[in-house]
Every structure is written in C-alpha cells, then in structure tokens.
Length: 366
Length: 89
Image (cartoon, rainbow over all chains, first blue to last red; front, side, top):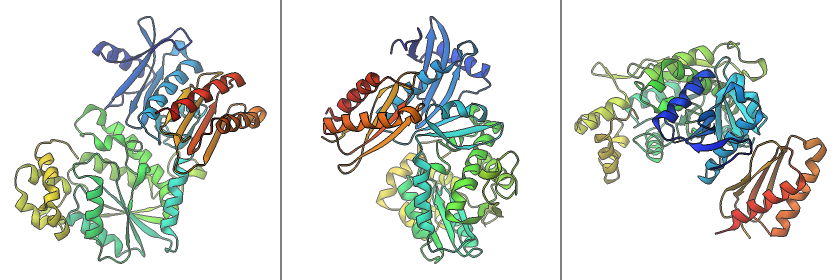
C-alpha cells in the first residue's frame, strides 16, 4: 500500500474500529454495508477514513467518499485498486454495485450500466462486452423456436418432484419452455450435479430446454442476498427487495427478449422469505405495461407471471429445503418419495457421499 | 510471446491510464480502447498500443486501454509494464 498521489494513504481494513469508521462513512452517504466482505480498502488522511470500497467475489461495492473529499480523485483511486485486485484474482467478468443516483460517476470510469432500479440499486459491468456476448448465446439457443415461449428460473438444490411438477405444468402451457438454472456455485449441491439432475429428470418432456443461467440471473452480481441466510442483518427485507427488483429488471430488459419469452412460471413459496419477496416483486415488475420508474426504451415487453401452488405430498409442500433438512437429520430414506427416480439414484450413489456429508455438517440456507 | 496471466498496470486516476491484459486462445491480439479524449487522441492511442504490442511480439491477448487523459510517455510506460508482467513467468 502507499501514497495515492493525493496525500492519502491506502490501507486494507482489518480491525473492528476501522470497520466501524467505514460503516459510519457508508451511512453518511446513505449506504448500508454490503455483507460478506472479503476485501475492504480505505483511503486515510492521517487517522481519518475519507474513502472506502470493497470487493465481494466479482463485485465492487460499498464505495463511498467523504463529502469533504469529493471530486474524482478518491473514488477513482479506490476503483483502480479494487479492479487490480480482481484482475489479479483471475476474474474476467467484474461488476460494480451502487445506487441509481451514483451510477453515472462510474460510467465515467469505464463501467457500463446494465440495469438500475429507480431510487434503488444499479448494476454496472466493467468494459462493455459481457452482456452482449451472453445475449448472443441466448439468441443462438432460441433460433428456430416459436415466439411466446415460457421460462422458469430454478436452483434445484436438489431437483425434487416439486420442481418436476412446476416444469411439467409450465411446459404444457407454452410452445417451448426454457429452464434457466442458477449457475453460481454457492449451493450445497454443486452446479454440475444440479444441472445434470434437471436434465435427466425432464428428458421425457419434448419441448423443454435446460440452460445455464449465467452471471445475469440470480448471481452474486444481480442478487447477492439470495445466497445469504434470511436472518442475517444484510438480508433485511429492504435489501432483498432491492436486489430482487434489479434481478427482475435484468430479466425483463435482456433475458426475456433474447429468448423471446413472454411468460414466466413460479411455484408459490411457503417456507423461504427471500423467495417469497422475489415472487411478489416479480408480479410487480414483469407483467406491468409500464413498471414504475423504468424508462420507456429499457422496459422490455410485459411478461405474464403464472404462479402454481406448490406440489404437495401427504399435505406438505415438497421443497428442496425440506429434502436438505431430512438429509441433515439423517432421514435420507424418507427422501425417496419426494424426488424423481433420477435424483434418488444420484443421492444413493458413491458420488453423493461428500455432498450428503457436507449437508449433515452445515446450517447453510443453500 | 504469449500473454500468460491477467495483469493490470496504471490506474483510473486523472492523467493516468489503466492497462489490462488478459490471455486469449490463439495468437491474435484484441484491442479495446476507451478514452475520455477518444475524439482527439483515440487514433494515436491505438497506434502506440499496437506498435508496442508488435514490438514486444505479444500474442494471444486482449488489451484493454482505459485512458484518463494520460500523456504519451505515461501510456508507453504503462504498456511496457503491463506487457512485461503478462509475459513474465
């Protein structure tokens, strides 16, 4: 670390005091500390923290400059330093999370705006190639398919009869159905396994394509609180609301038009508050002809939201979290009747041993 | 000489330039030039970048230049450092 050329010294934050200073600075600028920080830096004048920023996975966030030190210097020093760290980690796709009001400042530093929610969050990416390339790949998948396709977005951690029922229901109501699988590997079942079990468990449905969700659908960038336990402070209802709105704005503006999707299907959510907020936000943002505050050219075509009651067995909703609970409690045999044969075969295979072990030793939401 | 790892040199501070080199498959070089003075100096920045890349014999790389109004000598110094870092093993 060292001088930035502004007489300010750059430091990596470690101590409780430093984090308290940082929180005060963030709050003075109307921001709440993003949770999950791995790497937080600050610019100091003497002992006073005048600017800060954090790198959370591949997302720059929590960037704030003291009012008295505004001007381009401090923010660009913070951003440069975080970018270098991210590049050194081998990250090629780098995002920046900020408020809608501040987004233009970062555009001036070479970031491009992906989506913003009025009076809420904005997501930008470094450079300009990411989303274009991603949309090309989606358009290629949709070539030759009919318009008015449907979509479901699923994590399937792991794939249950509930997921199967939702996909079957949706596929019977649209000419073609895309199953977008959350790709970020932060769930107890690794992405490769989740993807494979969905493919195998839907192989008999002729009008279903299972595809990787990529970094623009429920990822650390679009929806960081999805991966955080709902009882943690950073997963407050307000934050979840904001992240959900951003994720859905991206779906409406980019993903749905690229796949020519006009209907999105979801299951009602009886257990998880994060998912239930997400579903409520979905009904507000996707079908409205003019979602409040989204500017006209970027709002995309309205998308109908179809909610299906959760599939039940013996009067209880079948959900992946219930499956994980049963495994955690050592009641694996009871899982058999709640999952498709393909999932069950995997769960009882050699390959599943480390995953089952991990679930038994974890209290993670995912 | 191929780019071996993702590296940066420089910064986004005013009058500086941030160079990012990332490895690409194949021998080609992909250039992305951003500048706050792209109208006046975009051509020259590209020329200097391509020339220095050629001279170093660098291939299999994507070179992203984010210029914040750097002088040509600054640009050259940052490029030299970045190229050296990306090919050092």
